[in-house]
Image (cartoon, rainbow, N blue to C red; front, side, top):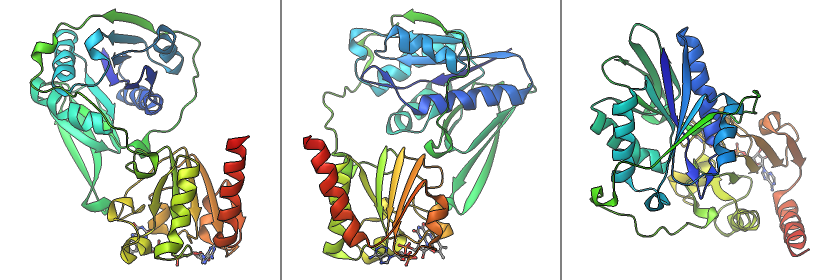
Length: 332
Ligand SMILES: Cc1cc2nc3c(=O)[nH]c(=O)nc-3n(C[C@H](O)[C@H](O)[C@H](O)COP(=O)(O)OP(=O)(O)OC[C@H]3O[C@@H](n4cnc5c(N)ncnc54)[C@H](O)[C@@H]3O)c2cc1C
């Protein structure tokens, strides 16, 4: 029997959206293994009973909820120690996570404690009943894909998935999950370091891979000051700024804000593309976005093929009107 574990991350008690795509991946891994088994979600920190049992409607069989008053906020050493004790006790087949800043910290800690392998930013992961496991991950800025194989029977592998491969899924089951709530078996004394404060970055400056809303500008927006309008729109809708390669080459935005094959792969809830033609190398990095808006002068621009809403026109005319209207709506 397989027991596929996933980490359901929470933020201030709400289950993170990426969890639902991760559950779909866990179900796929189980189905493709052609082995009977179950999906278990591990939730560390605060979460409501309803949010936990509702994970069943997405296909989770069991939820392990670990919470105490000192788990309000993520603490690397402590969370890894607690998680490791669960793994030692329950022996899952594998542990899946969504790649985030938190799992970039937790994954290696857990893998080191469990003396197992950690694959970061996987695009695909498979296991079979004989102990074979394979993960595929991009390397060399997405120009190459590497296949990694390991034996899961030795120790449960820890795999974090790229956010862009975790699709938004809908609940498709009636059942609620069985929720087992436990107090952690480790105390804060276990911590060698403690996070005492977190300052949230303004949404405009978030890492584009973690952004929920992205406003992306291309060559059509223009250099230097002309690009300020993109920052202004991002501020108006709590979005994060990104750009195409020409914008990065100009020095208008830093490289970490480039979307595309040689930049970052993003999958926000909404992306607004302004003055972007939609070259393959760009769209490869944003095609997993959920809602796509494109504004471009050229009605034949390739970006419109990807758009749920396309606006043909000059960004210098459209964006000021759009920002003014958003501000009006906000004050109403
Ligand atoms: C190996 C390789 C890797 C690459 N990797 C990347 C990558 O990771 N990311 C990336 O972005 N590119 C990448 N590129 C470059 C890519 O091929 C395109 O050249 C680039 O994406 C084009 O950027 P753009 O859409 O901003 O510019 P353009 O293609 O020049 O498009 C500008 C658009 O703005 C519109 N426009 C002009 N003025 C206005 C206006 N006033 N209002 C509204 N619309 C206007 C035009 O109609 C046009 O559609 C790569 C290329 C190669 C060869």
